[in-house]
Length: 294
Length: 226
Image: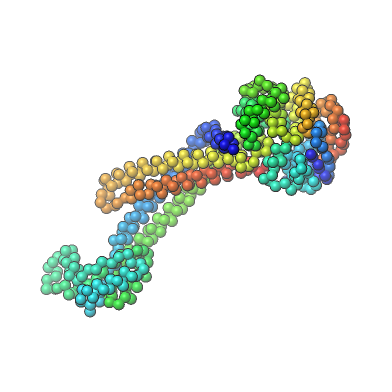
């Protein structure tokens, strides 16, 4: 049994070295596809993180009813607000704090002769899912003691649209790249099988099972796929660090924060390996299918 | 061993009737020549035996396997009961003589120990001892066909099926090869030789089955090819 497996593995590697140029081409193509896939994914992850940041900054302001002047009475509404499903957290801002904030932003002369009683107690509310902003706004407005709710629905809609578009584009691109990789891998191994068609015919004639005949080609696909996947991972890692290093250091400064590679590296490695194994095995099985029909 | 009853084979693509109502029986241990002109249906009949084709109608039983109904996954097991020899040898050029023969054992999962014991024995049997390390291109046609016979024999099949095995050989080498097949037959293996070489067939007093235009026209013990 062990010698049988050793033979199959040796045959798989023999095919790789025999068709050196084609093997090199397969690895390169898989690598190229995975690098593009990796860059698209990392771009998507960063855009998603950026949108999440912006979402966090996109707060709803809930104004307490004018009749509730007492601070403690106003603060009691916080429980009802935070009990709503889509609320991440709510910060209470008293009318004094609201006035201080106003004065720090605008000219103090504007407030001459006016005291804090013109301001209302309020809550600055952060949502869990910005896409549900409109529904949450209605729920907040329905709460007792709430006079008005200020929400930037148009921003929320824009963020959600951007996020959805980025997700769809990434998914489509990734699906296309996986398809291209499988196609190229299949054709590469097909060339190898064409060169060995006589060998395969003899194997069939002496009674080798389809599984036995297929296995070296599957091993070949697996090894080439994993090699391409591994090299692509290293390349993406290096590229990402170089590009983000330059971006953070120069152009964007403090405006954009990039997701560190270490936060997504493991997931990318797992996805690359899974895709390359799938591409390799599927390519190997697909390539030899026609020769096994006899 | 081989039982065919009312076998008909029609090729779907061209509607050609390759075999029509052929019935024959080859018993264990027999040496049989299957003869006929080109296009008579010999190759079709051989492909029915090896499982490359299925009959359109009729019964084909090879070494207890019913070839009309055999499942695809059972074909490898059936084929291990046969050893097939082709006119063009079909050796793997980048493998040595030893590896070409050992290959047939490896692909059916034979252990290394058994391969190391069996291959030299078979090569000696076909008269190729000492040629283990040579490559097929370094051998004469007759020697290459001996390697092909060794490969067919190495898994101890119940029957050897040889399709025009002497087609690429001169008369002297053809006779040598046929004597080798006769020797193998005397050791207990059934041999079916498909050929159209009259002189060679008539030099041996063996059973001769003749087919022409898809029909079996004669079947005689110690027969002649006329």
